[in-house]
Structures are given as structure tokens and as C-alpha cells.
Image 1 (cartoon, rainbow, N blue to C red):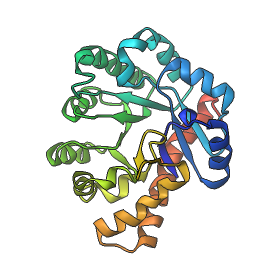
Image 2 (image 1 turned 135 degrees about the horizontal axis):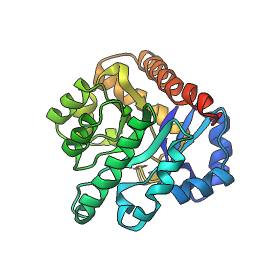
Image 3 (image 1 turned 90 degrees about the horizontal axis):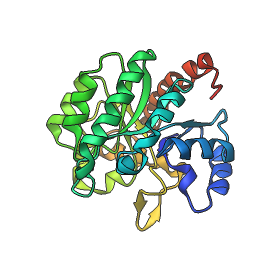
Length: 253
């Protein structure tokens, strides 16, 4: 299972899509802008195994702000939203207030719609992300993707009931491993974050997301099979949150 993948952005996206459909039990294809979502949905259709969600990535907030209304409209038909969130790193901080305006709008609309499952980017901005989540009760379910903030913010996120998607690339760093060791094991799922995430210079593929079980087993002090079963059980719970409501919404995945 892969709960955060930019499947549409691999160099040979259609080929990866076909292989992922065959080899991976479930892929959450997150998009970076509403127009990208509309285009991707036509070329790489949603299926029983591929869930595609509308999003507006904070890294392109300054370029895609004009698509916010389109995103809010798309959200009405889809139970999952992503990639959304905030990026406080030096490269994108100049547009931080604009990012916050977008994310607040997404959260408020999620509340108005009865809750959504959100795949959230929080690089150098976990404090602000969690603060906005707290100020919008009823937003739904937060899945913090590739969480790299402080242990104190991780504890706060755990107490708030957040989920975490963890990929092989995250576990190549000492900080990533340390944080993974403190995550709630019943709310961790696997991700690839491909094609952006790389291990040994190669993009992580959707079918490689599950390999995090090997590293997590070492970090958690469990057998690899046990971790694999736990991640799948968690994944099935999150999949139900995404797909059960989709059927009600008429998305049918």
C-alpha cells in the first residue's frame, strides 16, 4: 500500500500506473494543483486500487492560488484531499501567509462538508499546521506525510489523533528514524512519495513503499512480518475512511 504518491509525475507515468495497479493493493495518488488533478483524472483514471485526490501543494501556492475555488469545488465530490499543507522552509517562506490562507480555506471547507481525509505537507511548519488543525474541529482525518519536525510537535500530533505516512526515504535519516520510533503504531501507513523521494539516487516506486516494514521492524523491535501485517491493517482502516465516503459522494473511488 502507498498512501502518498505523485504517480502522475513519474517520467513514464502510464507505465508506472499500470504496474502499480497490478502490484500494489492500494495507491493514494495525491496531486499538486486542481488543474493537475483534472488532467490526471482523465489520463490515469481512478480505480478500485488507485484513489486520486485534488490538492494544492504549498510549494506552488504563489503560482496556483487562483485555482483555490476550483479545489474547493472538487473537494465536494472527493473524500480525500491532498497534497495540501504548509512549507516554512527558506525557499517557500516568503509565501507563507498565502499558504496559510489556502490551507485555512481547505480546512474550513472540510468542516463544512462533514470532514475529509487530508494528506498534509508540514515541512518546517508543523507547529502552524497543527495549530490550524486544532482551530478547525471537525476537519476530518489528518495524515501527516513525511513528518520531520520536533519530538514535541510529534507528541502534540499524536494527542490530536493524527496519522503518519512514512516512506523508505524518510528512514534513511537519523532524525526520521528517531521520529518513526515515537509514532503511534496503530496510525502509521506506508508511502513512497515518488518520484520525488529517492533512495540511493533512484525514485521510490509505489510497490516499494511497503519495504518500510523492514526498517520499522528494526526501529520498533518487532518482526518484519508483524510490522507488515500492522501496516496493512492500518492501511485498510484508512482505505475505508477514504473509499466508504467516496461511494456516498458518488466518486466510486
